[in-house]
Length: 193
Image (tube, rainbow, N blue to C red; front, side):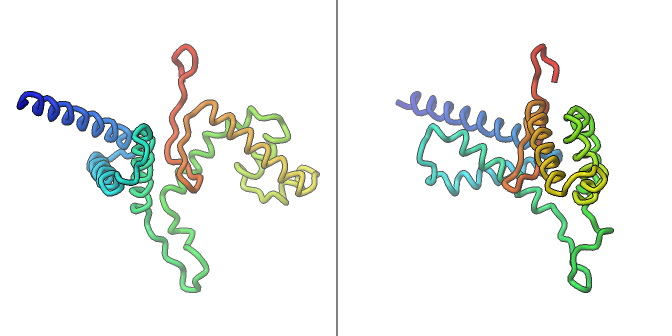
């Protein structure tokens, strides 16, 4: 009987080690600092421990665990986001205090240009004017010689086509607000991303 109990303990330790390694790998792909990775992994397991009674279907464990890990990563980045003080008049943040992530957005927008260039002309021109050049849709409509509703339609359809192109090329993970938190290239036939 003692050997059977030891074997059960060994199996449980192996299962725990494998689960921890998988969660750590998931978190490490999304967070660069090893100390932060360890903190988030610990947070994941604390959440699991606190909510394990909420799990109703044992077969849904992996998806449930992944959702907890994803939310822990999102919460980690939210906690790190600096609070931006309102100006004296209470009108909004000072543009000079813009968080460093905003600089990355400009960089990201530049990497979208090859995708936008592949769109049909009406959508390509609408997105170039509004998204890359920063024109208001009304000004872009006037420049293109079309109505404002026509420009809005082109921008909306262009964005939808651009999103489809990006989802074909990349696995994109967004938070519950629609903000991109991770993107990885999909593998194409032949092994090229």
